[in-house]
Length: 446
Image 1 (tube, rainbow, N blue to C red):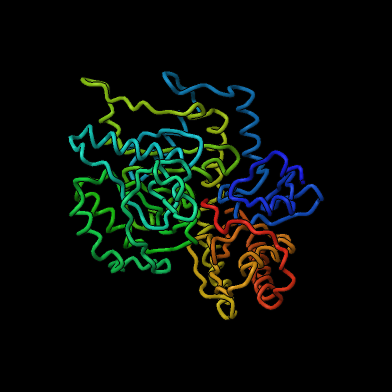
Image 2: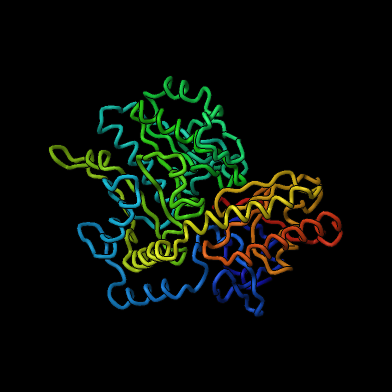
C-alpha cells in the first residue's frame, strides 16, 4: 500500500490508480511542476484550471508573505478590512458597469450556491414567490455541493444524490464549435425564447457556463446564443447567472468570457484564477438593483449566508496582486494572441486518424479523439504517454486539452502540441504497451 492509499482520499481518483502509485509533487516554478524524484512536468491544465500565472510567481508569493505579516484573518460579518474592500472595488470595476456588490467565498461551488440562494430570495422579495426553479444547460458543471449539482446534474456521478436535489430544467447544449462570428443570429437558440416565456413565472434564474462547457468536454458555443439568452432573461426580469469560475480572467482571450457576447449579467461567479490558484477564494458579483432588495428596512431581508473564510485578507492580497499582474503584463491580450497561434498549430492534428475534431477558444486547445473501443481507452493511453514525456493533464471523456498558464512562453506551448501529436500516434499504434495503465474517472469537473 502506498502512503497516499493509507490516508488521503483523492478526489475523482479510482482506488486502483492510487494503489498503482501517484507522482508526489513537491515544488513548482513557472509552468512546471516537480515531483519527489526530481522529474519535471509541464502543467498543461494549470492545476485544474486555476494556476493562471504558473507556479511560484514572485509577485504573488511576496504579496502573500507581506499580508501574512499584517493580518491573517478577520471575519467580514459586521467587520471589514482593507484587502477585501479594495478587491471588491476592483472586481466591480471589471464589470460592464461598476454598480455591483461582491460576496466572497472560498471556492467556485460556494459562489454558485450563493448565487442560487440570492436568486430564490430575490424572487420572494420582488413579489414572485412561485419562481423556485432554475434553468441550466445539459452537461453543464457548476460544482459539487448539492445546490450546484442540482443545476449541473450528471447521472454517472450524481444518481445516488438525486433524492436530495432541486433539479434544474435543462436546455439543450448549443453545439456550434465555438462560432465567434458576431453577426451570427444563433439558430441554435431557436425555440429557447418561447420555452422561457412559457415558464417564466416559475424560473428563479438561468445559470450558464459562458461559451465553453468545461467539464462536459470543452463543448463550445458562440456568443450569439449567450447574447440572445441574456436578452430573453432581461425581457422577463429573470436573473442571468454567468459562471466564470473556469473561463474568467483572460482564459478565453477576454477578461471574462461573457464579454464576447457584449452582455451585462445580473450575477457573475468567479474563482480559480482570481488568486492565480495560490489560495482558495471565490466571489459572487451582484448587480446593485438585486443587492438593494436585501435591505433590512422596513422589513428584514438580510442575506443570512456566509463563510468563515469569506474575504480572507491573505487570499484577497493574492487576488489583488494577481489582477495587477494581468493588467501590467497585458496577459489577456497575450492569451488571445497565443490562443490564435495555438489553434493554428493544433489544426495539423486533424489529419491524424485518431482525431475526430480540433477546436479552441482563447488559450484553450482541444483535441477530441475517436473511440477505439479498447481497454484502457485511447484518451487514458494518451494521458499515460504524455506523462512519460513530462506532461500532466487529465482527459475529459474523449477530449485531450491544453489550458496552460496564461504567461506560458509560446515555445513551451508548441512543444506541448508536439508531445500531444507524438503521444496520440504512439497510443493509437501500440495498445499492448498500455494494458496496465491505471484507470481514473475521465472527467474532473473543473
